[in-house]
Image 1: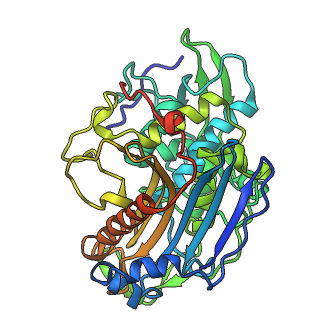
Image 2 (image 1 turned 135 degrees about the vertical axis):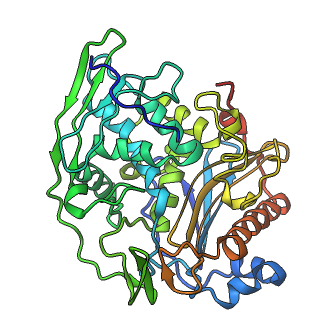
Length: 423
């Protein structure tokens, strides 16, 4: 096994259906649903700005009510507000969610004896500005692994961790697999945080996995994607910063990642309720995989010992936009949120499954809002604090309060979503 070679710093209508193992395909929303608009309309002090500028802010919301029958079946009722796949939003870090899930699926498909999410993962380099990783000081034993990368993605939305899983999977596997599952809108075609060309993002690093004795279990050679990109003309805003200079003209998102809100919402639902989604939307995961994902989706940064996060950088309500917004106070211990967020270019996104262990309520809520009133991208002058985070916080609490008052015949058995977070 290669010695340690580089240290990475830590860095609007209603669908009601009784779900069975083979659920029908997702129905597209229409404009007849008024539930979410009505709920927000009762609180104009919180949502008046959003309702007055819904299209300018590109607000999109999906809210799923969950009702259970005495025979153990689940009934989902989906409500939509302004959901429109013609309105592009940059998905930011939400693309990390399907990539994390697919990394576990890929291991299961490889079916190599001894290879699992805890195997040592060594990332090499093959030019094209690639970087190698041979150890991870944030792990208890210093070993980079699929499991530890996913943990960092779900706990604090770590960019480098995503890039390593992107390099393991490659564009073609990600795209072909998700498209085969019916998520034909998804395009995950570049790494995050680091600026690489389209050609450089097509190239992926060699990756090797070893067991605890240093025996090679599996090697993926360096690769190049020949994935044909969907033709897009996605230009937004009136200007953008490049090299410290303002460029007048729309910013081109045509070669940026894409993940529509219904697809993200559906993926989350499939991880939380795999028994009740249509077969084609089911990832190839083990029972251990589901437990692992749910545990770290709901774990708080300060519950983690490896990595150990500074409270100033990753407080307990960090990356829990819906319900907490940008709050840095204490979390409510009876509320557990299983989610994945994203924020970049003025877009805020969150997809979350909520459980209230004290009041026995549960629901799924996904939302996006665009906070870029000056229409300039890359200037780091976005309206997150004044518009985005307050909206996310208020929306999560609005639905949580509505769920407390909503009648349900059967209380949800939430024990399966209780975890030991001792790390």
